Amino acid sequence: MQQKVTVVGAGNVGAMAAQRLVEREMADVVLVDILEGIPQGKALDMMESAPVERFDARIRGSNGYDETEGSDVVVITAGLARKPGMTRDDLVLKNQEIVGGVTREIARRSPDAILVVVSNPLDAMCEVARRVSGFPRERVFGMAGVLDSARMRWFIAEALGVSVESTHAFVLGGHGDTMVPLPRYSTVGGVPIPELLSQDKLDAIVKRTREGGIEIVNYYKTGSAYYAPSSAVVEMVDAVLKDKKKVLPCAAYLQGEYGMRDVYLGVPVKLGRGGAEQVLEIRLLDEEREALAKSAEAVRELFRILKV
Ligand code: APR
Image 1 (cartoon, rainbow, N blue to C red):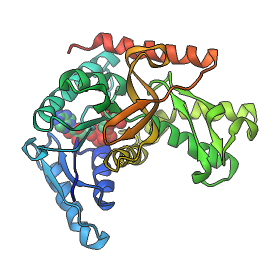
Image 2 (image 1 turned 135 degrees about the vertical axis):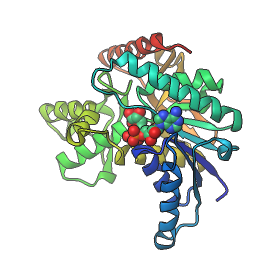
Image 3 (image 1 turned 90 degrees about the vertical axis):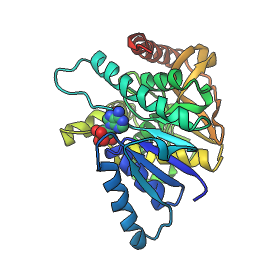
């Protein structure tokens, strides 16, 4: 393949994203993890599926970073999940150490790469990657909104008994409790969903979207979602590699847009070969603006914990 993508973290999200990338022949992939043998084993296992699945993209696994040199896009999924007894602040500091270390290695070898951050807490980890890499804001952004809106689209499709392809959903804000799903910009066949669903049903969809991550964790018990998160990553990487100028909700570093500055927040972004090329601003109602400000405040609170 002509393009090279590195995926750091060969866990559930990373491995699944890597698999989707090579199976679709979108790029050659380097899969990196700190666990000895795991990225090598998963990469070899995937290559051995290639004759049957019929793809000619290559995937290699490594515990180091030399193989990642010259990557076009780097997806960062490395991190720890929150364990019992760990405070949110502990998790931020631990994952900051991991994401900071990964970013340092990546930035040295792929100074022109675009970084797609997946590790949680997402908005704070985007900031860690931005500060440590020193890359411009266009080249450091996070995956959250594509996943959140995909979840919302599925709930809409299920509620109305329509094809998922006919749905569109719009989600702003941080990745978490303060997420701001916007039904009035969410549509089925171009029709805003408040025209099609009762207020009760809309409220239920908004709530379920906001709690989408937890719903899956409650099923899995020991782990979090990865099928939908990896799909979301791949859609973003595809938009970048093909310079599609696709408008997708991403965690982007705001510099005055939506009246906010120096904070990562989920907003609609034009994704192309330059990365997050443009933040699209839409007019918000007062209560939506307030919800977004609350979301930004929650993200800033995490930034204050960071020691970078
Ligand atoms: N360098 C490289 N890899 C690392 C490092 C490190 N310093 N530290 C941890 N890892 C690896 C782990 O070894 C593990 O294989 O990151 C991987 C994380 O995988 P999982 O625990 O399976 O987590 P996953 O479900 O893939 O989620 C990854 O995405 O959605 C977010 O909250 C989620 O932050 C989490 C991330």
